[in-house]
Image 1 (cartoon, rainbow, N blue to C red):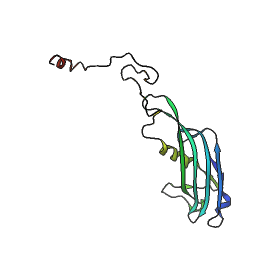
Image 2: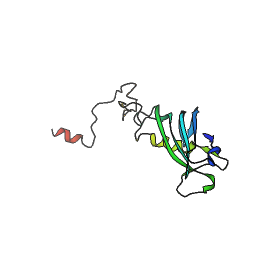
Image 3: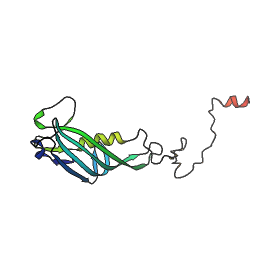
Image 4: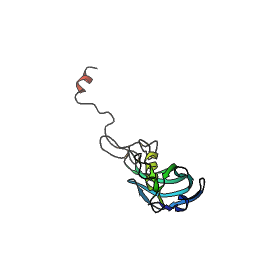
Amino acid sequence: MIRFDVSSLIKARLGASLTLNVDTGPQSLADLDLDFLRGTVQVIRVQSGLLVQGTVESQLRLECVRCLDPFVLPVTLELEDIFRLPEAGPRPDGSYALGVDGWMDLAPLLGELAWVAIPMKPLCDPDCKGLCPQCGVNLNVESCTCESERVDPRLAVLKDLL
């Protein structure tokens, strides 16, 4: 959990702010493994709650879609969202809320942003060669000894016609 006490801002005047330093070790957020979280977050009292703005750096542990090797992807998470005050009550839109004790948990927001930061096809390297479709060897590490030209046996008869 990445929690901060922001109870001083609940009754504060509009525009009052608080700067939070995020600096944690390995975290597991929304089923993602992050090596660390480091950054600065500004919390500002606004009419509808607390506006959270900032930038948090991290690294995600992912698996390459081509070679299936694990790798680390550096990400920058840009935060900008409003946390509802405890007395605002639940809302169906799923927005974030402060705890009744005045603590703000940034973990759900950071978890969502981390998922959005993952590319559709995460690659360990843009030039990743992947796995051999026949023998399964990692082509980034070694070359395989499979036949380079493989003919579908159903079409082999057509080769005789040429």
